[in-house]
Length: 382
Image (tube, rainbow, N blue to C red; front, side, top):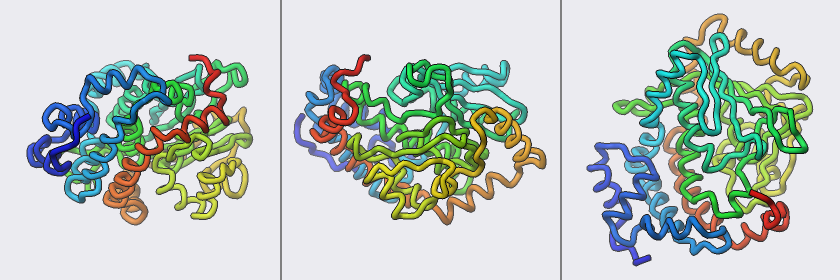
């Protein structure tokens, strides 16, 4: 790839018409490759890279990380990009119409169904323990959009589906994080991380932005409840600090095996210390400390511990409890919490570091060595 000849911020201003139009990170990188030679890899280069196993990639996508890190480091451009990623996806409107008409919606990687005054979003990737990968990313974001836009519900519930994996077949699991088999095989692009954490995960926490208002001043949002069964590993554990209420089975646990995977666990480094403290967060991320949901540390994240067989009843009870007096103040209280916990600028600065550092991790030889040592990735089937 040619050496870049254009400054990232000048390119961003040009591609967004002086920050008067919103462009998502994937489209931003595509347009940057077309208009500014050498700034980021182009379509032909990325297509060649996509066909290679992770160990054989040339690391061209590191330039995307550097470009996005520069944009996110700038207060004005970074806020604008965060705003763009909080807007509903273009296809979400047609799916919303279908859901409002039928009360149910199936998407790749996700399923929505109305339950009383709530929408239940079920994460689905049964063969891979509901792991996240390229096949689930867009469906999950559309599902979050639709759940928040639905006018007949006041609350959203996040739950894992029943899986087919041999060890846990027939049981619900919350989720196993990133699909490590696909990661090892080179089937997960670098931008996947940024689309995920600037997109649907941040929408869980902040809601949906409006095009003409700051996300800090006005968003479309509802309270979120998580129902954790069996385990919440990696990326699924990362989602829990974005939730307003967490129900967990008494035998469930949470882990962030980032060291064994060789990557940065999304925004967990930013959010987890608020719940369990900096020391336990470091132990979880850097030393693989398991947090049992029913333990004293687990209860710092989980609000209600129930017997595994009673999860359906616990969800129904929680929906009724949180909606029986209406949720008129929920959005205001969520914004008030965020003002003290994680203003958009704090998140923006974190994501600038994340974009730069995750690009290095994603293409590090250590990632391959870790996956082979801890995951036996070379012998895993598709």
